[in-house]
Image (cartoon, rainbow, N blue to C red; front, side):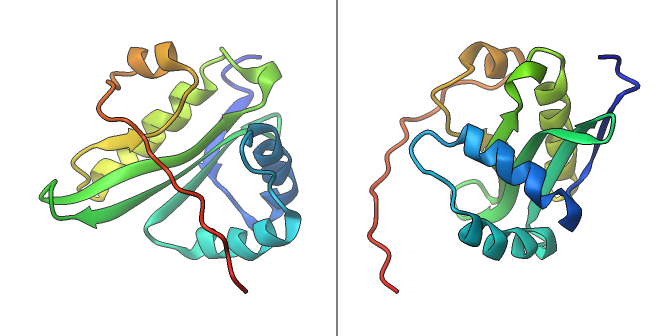
Length: 147
């Protein structure tokens, strides 16, 4: 793969099938369901506090990053949060993740975010090489959704 083959851009409606396939590869705890994905995808594309980036190689989506900015009280303003970052396994270690995170950082800075954060159990060396440091322990509590 040459860098000329790789392009970053904001996701478009036509990317849905390829992003869904990557999301299914990404998920370990959850199994993405197509209907929920189809409900959320257009809302994320229109949400001005969200950025959904794709990395394409020869026109095919090989990675994506979904992140948000939001206001806080403790950090004196906005922060940015990477919710999902996924690279197709055959395309890892080619600089795609780095490029996606750098583009997200640029966007976060343009929105006056004080920092970028994420939660993960994987790729500690990768994030460390990009200047991320361990800052907290991540807790979660599963909620039962009532419809």
